[in-house]
Image (cartoon, rainbow, N blue to C red; front, side):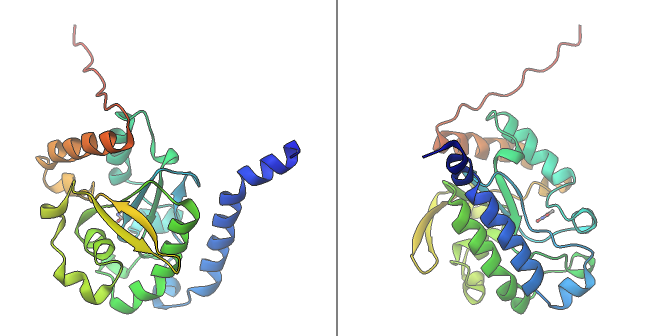
Length: 220
Ligand code: URA
């Protein structure tokens, strides 16, 4: 194999993701896409081991076309730094690819229309673990992405930091799932930060990584 072929092989996931981004732009033509400013497709490494799944873009994400650009993304980045990782080395995408007006809850038909693109993202990246963020994504992923079954699934308060297996796609590829609280929940309930940290310690164990908290800077 020559070096050009090796580079091409190495870039194949990135190319597939870019093709999928363009397909998403072409194919989703619903009310959400008409009202939104930008497609918020996903960001991070095309070879990520961790795939975070959020619910839907907010105002800032819609403006910039990038998921988790606000405080929630910073919270995630901080925790990942304890695993010597950052968000760019993971992958992060939402269930909904366009912002719902006024951040209202996603509707069933919107989820059904947007989900195939999330599936394809997961199938291209083939992460070691899927990490749904918060109640909504947790229920959706653990119902095997069946919107009608979501209500039967317990919420993230009960299921955070527990390991599950789901299978996806025509080939029934299995994925491990490890739900955690949505990082923005800590803005409303700072006590959750300790829970979030403990959950990341378990995630680190699963990935065989060391969890090393940065030392407090000395005040002297
Ligand atoms: N919350 C989400 O679920 N997704 C984003 O992109 C930003 C905040």
